[in-house]
Length: 211
Image (cartoon, rainbow, N blue to C red):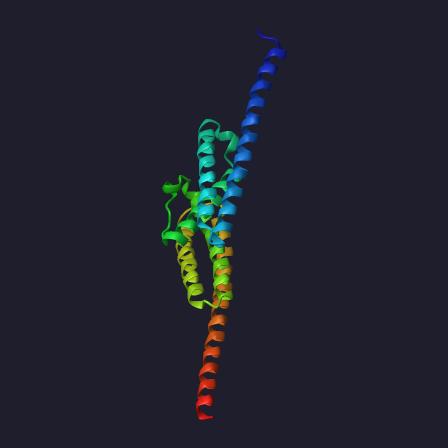
């Protein structure tokens, strides 16, 4: 029978190895989240090449994490890993919508369906920000186009919400509903202001002609 000290020493080595794997995986997850967030920021700033580079960097690490998850699923599966994949999904979906006006599929970016869906829900918030940028520029038409995309995403997510159990989706849908309602109000207000300003311009021209 082996000595207890030897047995525990071997157990310690295994636990230390798993601890190193977990720490490395968590560092990689933080990297994916950071690069994805930075990519979204670059998209808003219309710096697409920088955004693509950041997403590519994140993509390489997600592949590494997938390999780790296949060997040590119990070490990395959980909320933090899911959060990284959601952020990565959001960046990819947003980039494809802006550049190609198309929705990228989960298989194309190699993420689980649940994380893709939750990332998609967060895209609504990015379109809210995009809408406000257009409204500040006085481009109500573009703002309304953004609202239509927000509505489309929300409508489809509500269908999933009713039929599938995706943890966290109901809460994100509730947030999305409020965002859309506020955005719709902003566009309505800007439309009224634009219409009023147009009426004033026409009135001024009529007065000038009479004078």
